[in-house]
Amino acid sequence: MKAVVCKEYGDYHDLTLDEMDDPVPGPGQVVIDVKAAGLNFPDVLLVQGLYQMKPPTPFVPGNECAGTVSALGAGVSNFAIGDRVIAYTMNGAFAEKMVVPEQALARLPESMDFAIGAGITTTYGTSYYALKQRANLQAGETLVVLGAAGGVGLAAVELGKAMGATVIAAASTDEKLALAKDHGASIGINYEKDDLKSAIKEATGGKGADVIYDPVGGKYAEPALRAIGWNGRYLVVGFAAGEIPKIPLNLVLLKTASLVGVFWGAWAMRDPGAHVGNMKEIFSFYKEGKIRATVTKRIALSDFMTGFDDLAQRKAKGKLVLVTD
Figure (cartoon, rainbow, N blue to C red):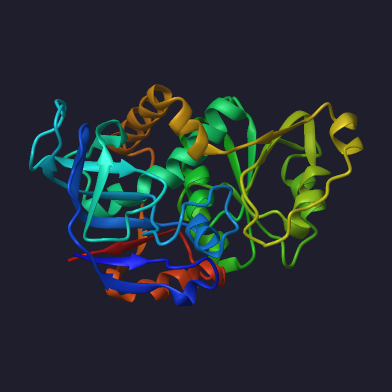
């Protein structure tokens, strides 16, 4: 099989597409013929050695995929050869085949194609966990999403609207804001042109945001936090801007606000039952037409570097997916 391989941590341009032996399932494992694999910004960080987890090298990156079951290990009872599935794992998805534990699988709805299935787990899983479990977002509240046209940002826009919130999208270009509005945002803020704090205050009638979803960090974090409302929740999702901000904690005290960390991958592994429950609810939103789970770019596995470039250079809009066919 062909697979993208990280031989040493460093520049993602050093990744190679190599021939490898097909995987063989052990007890409780299955082999998936990968049809599509989702690309995410943490994949860039992982191969650079900057992510929270560091698998031993060499390894195949990619933490989510969709495909069909092609081999079963001893003791597997819930899946059969030919089943359409999605899988979440820390690495291994950027390949034509991968082996995963049975409990890492979920069934892919018949109405969902492989590319959408491959792109829904990390972005929607992260955003739904953030909004539901970490922020306890309620209908009628105001949600501000930074980086609103990125993978997790666009998912947060759709899910926030599906949960009954008023969604304010913040992004770096008018084109990105148009995309976020097309996916459910009511208001757009261009934080490269407008003062972010003032714009959020104005958009909320001076009240401030109930929930701020921040996968960007950098220079945008403090002005966004200064615009949070009373009892607001600030979700720390990631640092796509490259800089981890240093926040004056008196801002949290003055609004009785909460700074809330969102590490979805670790949570999903610690509480797989709750993760599966969240995914079922996400699939229900999709079937009901409340979320679109749009894949904005499909890239051949052999052209994987294009996807990494788009993510690293912050050119990506929505969800990028590698396809093997």
